[in-house]
Image 1 (tube, rainbow, N blue to C red):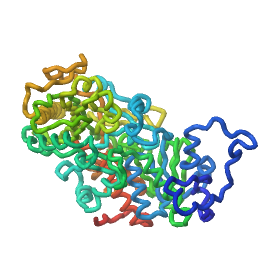
Image 2 (tube, rainbow, N blue to C red):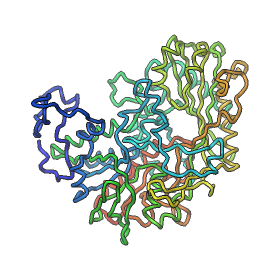
Image 3 (cartoon, helix red, strand yellow):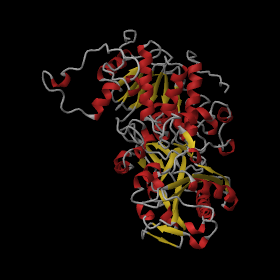
Length: 605
């Protein structure tokens, strides 16, 4: 096995240690490359100050020498910008269909966490938020001064993006919840091969199918209570066991709860493509970290052939390379605004997302005749979806927990909590051994019909962050927020067997349980999440920025992924749907590789 058949801009790391699975069975063929210098410290000591970046780069990421060759004469079928979930979805599907696809993935940051932080030991909880979150925009003062809005959650500028921190809730929205989506996108979701591949990629598992001892009797109790009582919840339409991206792809594994994140699967693809390339059955996947895309340059014929990065200029002369933007709704829009003046007519003129309410409550186990507690930690998770009278959507992410030993259960509770940002704290659990604690994170959608929500270019000198960002609340938004707060209290009462007298609520100011409901200003959590609609699919005359192949109008070889595509946000967590559309894009492009005019038929499922 050699890589002599590969061009020098497609390299396989020269010193490849076989993975665990290759160390059994037949002897692994010897590496063709020379051993690393100074093996074992002979005849002189080896390198004494390796960094995590240098160690990972050696076996997985593009080296300086390879990058120089890429800049000089590299040719790729797809250049993927970003390394989050939609990047993984696109890359995985494209290489599944054609392992010989030449793909370069650009990530602005470096390698940090190898997996979701909840899969790591408990002290890693400190990495959530703070310095790991960047804000590539200037926030408007108007947004800053709205107490319950405050700001928009930022980006995670590392390999894997937000996937190492996300909640992993993956509901499948019905067509009726995709308000304003064009017919092409609706028909795409109705194909038989749309939802299941996305669920398989993310390992989506309903909470009642996780199959460990933690999601057991309590899960069964809240599922039954909410399904039977959903009509008692203001505006609610459905209740279902929470669909979570936590499953294990191996049916023989005893690990039943493992929050999905990109780094592991992406590096697995890289390793598989490495083996395929050695056997002349595929092309290596080239992963380039610490490389920001600054700007794209379009020529008169509508093709982009120049990408300006902070590590040099990527260029090509033909029409075959496609650029796939997977950097997030706001960074994608920022790139479009800086690169294509014609995009400024529509991109960023619409901005949606989700606002949040967090309510923690508890009820005595004695009030629940249909539930018999275990002597071990139990958790249940349920997803309740509903609407306001205007048709605007909300949903409640419910986590129920019974912890007989809060101190002893801390590690398992942190690891298997469905939504760590809305998890029960030790202070809430320590005196609740005879209670079920409910933590509800309720999300509502910003209306898409609000011209005061936007992204606009400013005079900043850094083209990766030279935009102003603004979110405001309309009367319709506020009405929805009031209604979803009431729905959350209704859901708590339903799970408490309609026994209002025994319910207590957590006062976050005083840090104690009380019978009175907390003040509104203490339950509405600042920080917009799931921002969307910045470059939605639709005709230009109707405000749309992208065509049916998710390309900016007038640009032939740039395609956008993620929540930017959605004309409205709905209330549903967007990741599953985003991945479905990214996989759909891969199927369209790979099936029609070589059609450089960009006219792609829609594949049947």
